[in-house]
Length: 172
Image (tube, rainbow, N blue to C red):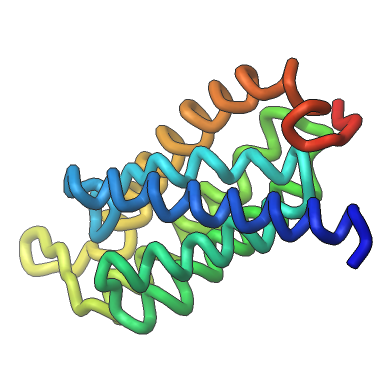
């Protein structure tokens, strides 16, 4: 195996492990699942800015975290897919530091409400009208904004001066 392949696999594995640990902490605080979600692990969705290894790392970490937190099969499949789509979007927009935080927010705000409504059967009604999808899109979207746009941007700022040491890249 080439040195770069080992580094890529190692980075992906470390990112996956960090995602799991941070999700477990959020889960212990009641913030990792359902309508109100502020997964600290989603801050890691800025890491594709530094390395493409973050894309599979985030996806695998999300799958494992969802399994360990007792998520339903639809959440394991589609919730993890939302993180994968968000990570790919971040990687593709990595030259735009603000815009790159939006794909995880958008992917999760679209996919997770559908999982909550149809995968878990959770509803939110007001005056006899089912407002579940817009309500969950709002709550999940706000949680993602906190996790990715706020915490992730702070993480990006902290890691930026050390990017060559940590990731061995010349990202800008």
